[in-house]
Image (cartoon, rainbow, N blue to C red; front, top):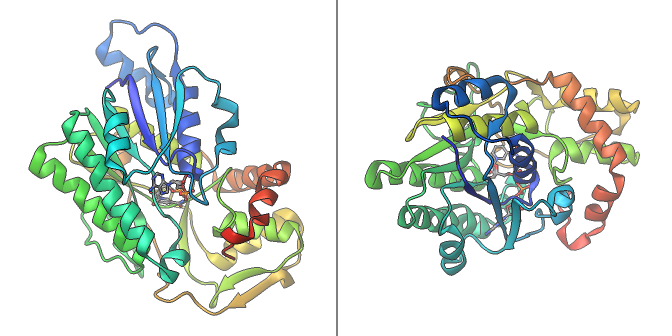
Length: 352
Ligand SMILES: NC(=O)c1ccc[n+]([C@@H]2O[C@H](COP(=O)([O-])OP(=O)(O)OC[C@H]3O[C@@H](n4cnc5c(N)ncnc54)[C@H](O)[C@@H]3O)[C@@H](O)[C@H]2O)c1
């Protein structure tokens, strides 16, 4: 499927900004050949989609984690437009959704620790905001609606991996709000035949991630010779997906996925937090004495792991090796110290 006008919500955040850039970079201006079958097949491995008419609209409220600096390099691209607005604002959403043939909902409150302190905004944005978007998608008959969900909706797994049909047992208010949105999106497919796809990604890392999340927090603290706060015994395990692999997977699902389906997006690279921390410190040449064990997060999930065989059957698989992607990420934070130092100085937004 080829789309002309794609509405991306939350495109000024970490994954959303990488995705907007990915879309613009991988959509070829070249004229489309009359080869409906071939277009899809040829783009399977390159990530390239021949689309000469692409327009990308980014709707973002610019909360503490939204940052237009993340998209400086594409802001003058004639195919791209930014609109500041709230996904809960029906007037704005309906106005923008008109004429769009695809919608991809990244906008969310995304930090588990913040949801433990106060979940109000999580319920509002993640649930009510998604419902507003779904209503607009229904009214304007978009051809594809992608709800960006998370592996956290499944809860914790002691061993093995979650499949798309595993039960949803979210443990944090953040995960519960994402599970509600995920199920709401599915219900619009069942009830209204809205062409919805839900993707559940594992933990992302890479450039432009707000420095409250573990990888950028630890890289930037260590660079400043500050302690890195590790919860409990450091043995909680996460599956790490490089953000560009995630963007590639979401684009793949957008173009080749099947309506009404759920796709897990994983990497198979599971690490205990302590091992991840040691790797980061090693790359930066820092001493392990920077590690500070702190009181555990309430309701902290022990382990996440995804079975992502279903999306590989669509022809996608992760391309980046974890070690290379982590090195690239550390390098990015080294080379873009101004970016994260400005964010870390904004005391009112501080959460670490
Ligand atoms: N980061 C991860 O590891 C991860 C993993 C799986 C799924 N996800 C999901 O991916 C999506 C993006 O995550 P992220 O890490 O980039 O988050 P982020 O916090 O970096 O970005 C969220 C963006 O949404 C915007 N936003 C928030 N509330 C809004 C509202 N009411 N209206 C419009 N815009 C609003 C913010 O301004 C920000 O630009 C989220 O839905 C998240 O649940 C994230």
